Structures are given as C-alpha cells and as structure tokens.
Amino acid sequence: MNKTLLLGALGVLVMLVGHGIGLFYAPPEAYMGDTGRILYVHVPTAWVGMLALTAAFAMAVGALWNGKAIWDSYMEASIEVGVVFSAMLLAQGSIWAKPTWNTWWTWDPRLTTSAIMVVAFIGVLLLRGAVHSPSRRMAFSAVATIIAFVDVPVVYFSVEWWETTHQGFSGRDNVDAVMRFPLLVSLAGTTLLGLAFIKARQRIAWARHLEEERAPDLPETPAPLSLPDPSNQKENLG
Image 1: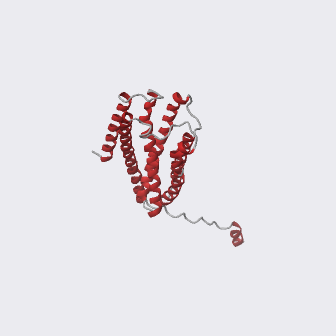
Image 2: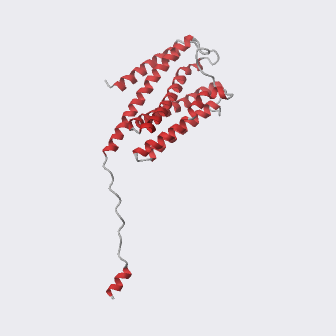
Image 3: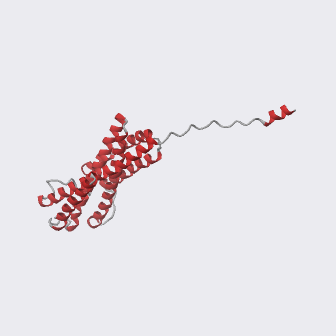
C-alpha cells in the first residue's frame, strides 16, 4: 500500500477515535456544555493549519537559500494544505461563535488576523498561478510566503496581545485531564492526516515540475518582416 495513503488512513482512524471519545465519553465543557465539544475538532484544525504554514515558511527560506525545486514543491503543498485547514478553522469558528457569542462573525483580533492570514496565502497561490517561469515562480512565491508568514505569529499571540472575546490557549491549566486525552488523540490524528495531504500534494507539484523540465524550449520570436517601400518601387520603374 502507498505510504502516503497508509499515513492518511492512520490519521483518519486516530482522529475518529479522538473525536469519538470527545463526543461520547468526555464530560461537557463547564461553561458551554455540549457546544464546547467542537474543541476536539477546532483546536487540531488550528494546529495543523498553522503548522503547515510554518512549514511553508521554512520551505520558502530553503528555496531561496539553495534554489532547488524540491523545496518549492513542498512549499506549494504546505501552503495549499495550510490554507484549506485555516479556512476550515474560520468556518468552525463561525459555527462555534453563533451559540456562544450569538453572532456568526465578529471583528475579534483572533478572527480578523486569521482571515487576513488566509487571504494573504491565497494571494501567494494566485501569484504562483500567474508566473509561468519555474525559477521566477519559485523566487517570487518564496518571498511572498515569507511576507505572508509575518501574520502567523500575530494570529497565535493575538489572544495575549489584545483584549479579545476569543478563549486563550488550551493547555494543562484550563483543560481537564479527562478532556485533554481525547484532545491530544484528535490532535495526533489530524496532524498525521495533514502530513499525508502535504506529501500527496507535493508529489503532484513535483511531477508538474518534471514535466516543465522536459518540455522543449519555445523557439525565439522571429524578426518582423520588412516590406519594401512602395515609393522606391515607383522611382525604380520610372
């Protein structure tokens, strides 16, 4: 069996175990009740999204450092997976916000910076699609990735830097052990699934790179045709 497929299947299995324990065996959250069970999906989604975008930043630095296309393929894959998980994070946040804040959306610092992060990395993907030269595409998108990544730590620390209605960091201090276990299991499963997605997408990006390398160079543009001046022809005839 394909190793990437096996990794993804293992991730789904572990994730489902964590979700099952969190949904059916863990106690309700003290303040939000059963609504708080979205924690077992929301936190792992946030973790994998930011992990993938951090990996994209590392791959961008590597691509600029040595110029090898393998870094570029992993950068592209990591950005795409990070954008998907971060977009899922925003959707889950809206679902969670409705019963807890009585609104689908609020311009809370955590939500606002997360939306900016998603838009910024979508811009990187659009830039990649607009540049056809492989070397320029790698260089331009690597620089754009590094710039877009500036918002990632801002998203992470936004709950500490600004007054926000969003809950703070989840950890030993505010998550009971009976709830922490399924959360960690869900986190492990979602991480494995995210890694499988990155590897699968990287293989596609690398295959496209190899096709671009094998493609013949386009011929040079021929020089424009020069037509004789009609006035000179009349003088010659005269």
